[in-house]
Image (cartoon, rainbow, N blue to C red; front, side):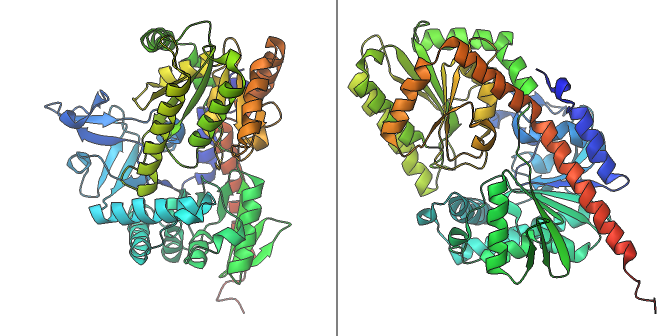
Length: 524
């Protein structure tokens, strides 16, 4: 199945977005930028030249993920993207308005950069965003560090983003905020542009009200988000949690039947939009010559026997991803099933993340120690049970790992959606593997029926599930993967875009109709 068979493509998504915007400007707002400019001597990934006279500045382009999917849509609608300019050469290429036209070889839209001081990066990004909101929303409140200085920086930085939006947008824009870094910015934009259409997608879980109320700034966060006309989450459960929190923490009127909130004279609709991946692209990567070449070299250099079963895990080194729990389950599996020693190899691709934050530094040390422990216990001269790498792997290499895996272990202790699960499914283009999926991942709502489900904290049950997955017949594996692929291709990232903007268009039509029906101030 391809994206064309589902009816959702980058082109059709762009048309849907354009129909909402009509003659209004689309402004996307995110913490991370789609393109960054860096000096060549600081670049390690061989990025393409920006076309400067001396070739000293390079451009890092979107390589998969949401930014890669949104980029062609932004090119089609010719809007503005507001984001933190974190490249070391970013200031060199912008104009007086702090904007640069992208992509460099065929400029189609403006990238408006927001400059953050080192203190803002430390307190707004590494502090409030990732030491308050991230653990809060992933139900790990013991890791929260709610310093007043973090909150001040978060407010100040959200005000900076709002100011950048206002300076870049016309009087009646469509503004789409992304994620938990920017929950306050919509309120400032609303106050200055009351006619703007504002929408927000929250990419991580939304917690229950009992958890959310542990945040000292709970009401202020909701006040910012309720300035939007539409707020989106991955799942219906997160929508219900959000409405519960609004009802408990504010004086807003919540209408459960319509999924809407009336607050400060404004109505906000709350909807679920499960984010997908570019499934067709992932399948193409898995079947590429680059994937074949990468896998042949990786298997040889790492000493992986082609006859061995292969399990794979791919994620950031984050305490929410369940890597330690997974290693414990594998250790138990090899303990209880000695016949699989030397027959099952596990490859763990970890990407170092948020280094310098104590919880993350400690996790990296614990994962490395756990890998050493398992390998010391079971390894032989001819077999390494856990192959662990934090090296940068190309997209084709990641796709090859997925394709070759007999088991895809996607077992977070909490995850808003988890796109790795969907990428793994899309990459099953040859002998099909089995998706082993955590019950606590948002993706379970879509993929749970055909995955082997585990609870990451149930070590014994997890180990048994590994054995169950390995025992499935080829026919059963093929059936499961076929059903999963139908879901992943039908609900891909372009379907997500279309669904989001079709809903936004309906909300906007209702809002405008209501405005027209209201008597003007001059009417008797």
